[in-house]
Length: 250
Image (cartoon, rainbow, N blue to C red; front, side, top):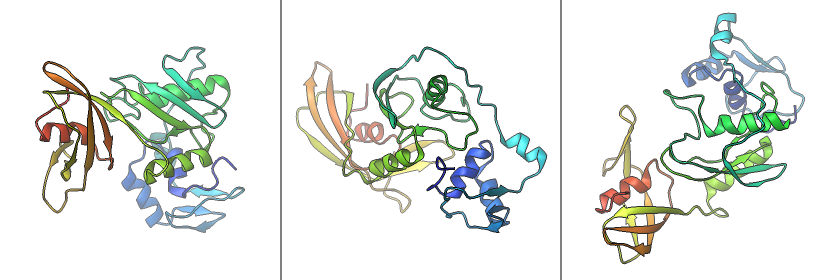
């Protein structure tokens, strides 16, 4: 329907089979087990309103790859809503909460809390094909604003805005160890060890460009409050860069 039009077909398949691995999703397309209007399409196909999608899996695979969303119509929403209209929801995420689930915790997330909230308001129906989602994310240990798109076309526009960085500017506040009196720029490439989930400064060919700007706001006896802007969105970029220059985050 119109809620799902304009998105890549693999996004829809991942929503229908949320517990399936990416390798399994890719295999479905390689085996031509995903069709639109009974014709095989590739993974980059863009869905249009009114089309019929067929996904060929066994009954046991379907059962194992779908999940019970465990949504409840609650009248309370524990997070601060900064702004909301029919298109977007802006939420202030507390620290110690994931935006999305990981292998250890898939249920207690900001995204699930938002879905419960919108379900209670009648603005979201489970298994409708599209679930409202965040246009960006911040770390579990970082508090701050997260923007959700309630409609697929709105979420797609938000994702583009955050990716291109021309019309949206993200600013962070970080309390760091030591006294910092001057503004500065950190230009140090970062590499991620996927198996250990560790990010570090590196000069290898696998390292990616990372640029961080910082400016002191308050200088204390043993620490400094910095305003930080990141020109690249690498994982744990601020934490790694500030440690790299000898001012780790407190």
